[in-house]
Length: 318
Ligand code: SAM
Image 1 (tube, rainbow, N blue to C red):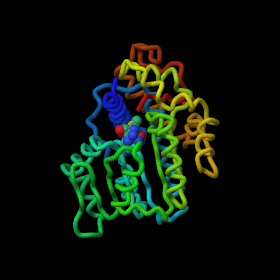
Image 2: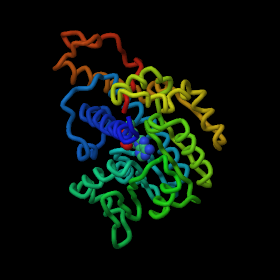
Image 3: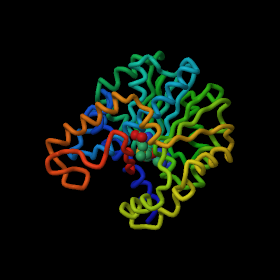
Image 4: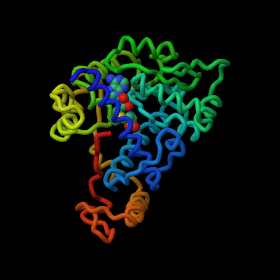
């Protein structure tokens, strides 16, 4: 199986993530008025554990991000690497929390889809134009550049080119910079993810890196890759070296980072506001109660079994 097929399977994880997020938003786990413009309503219901996992992920990343924005008083830039259909730019704008510049980066084909939605949907394009101070907006199939928001079509494995593309959009290495990889590094080889981590450590004067990814996924990940590719490519990805939080931390400490903190997602989930968690559990009972699942999680009468509000949120491959 060639790199193209492998890359296509990696790109398809963008749809998995955005469909799961769209579903969780549609049943009330969190608010995101913009995701519906990027993703149609999923036909299939998702298990509550999946929605809870995404809820914890989005809230956990959001909290760290807001702490950074607060600390820098928004005099900073945010670079979302492997952003997929992420709607963070619009949400931050609504909350009056835009950094000086916000960048989304993904493969060119993903980016061109995102730009197409933006161009054709005023609820997406209007906020971008409102935040734009210059006269002309640079926009083509694979990139968009305004004074506060840029979308860059590139490859995280080609760092010299990526740096050049970002600089063209006025990325400033001297500004405090937040880089995010939400479920992205796991789809890169260990070598490429290390290069990226090192590049960030050496390129920006002051930076914070939020990395969300699965640990100890070797079996599961192997299965996913085999399912997608029927190949041995899974041996090339970074999963093997990310067996635990400790190895994750080491990966950063050995590649230019001064301090690293790691949190287990169960802890993140348990630290979220209890009334929100309770509301979400009730929501998932109601939404799934109309259409009980036949697997072991649900009884025929729609009551919830084997999982409480403290249960482990599930991670899926997006
Ligand atoms: N971060 C988004 C989220 O959480 O909703 C999307 C996550 S999705 C699982 C992984 C994303 O990383 C995909 O959109 C994929 O195209 C992107 N990605 C993976 N490897 C990449 C690479 N080498 N260059 C650019 N984008 C990449």
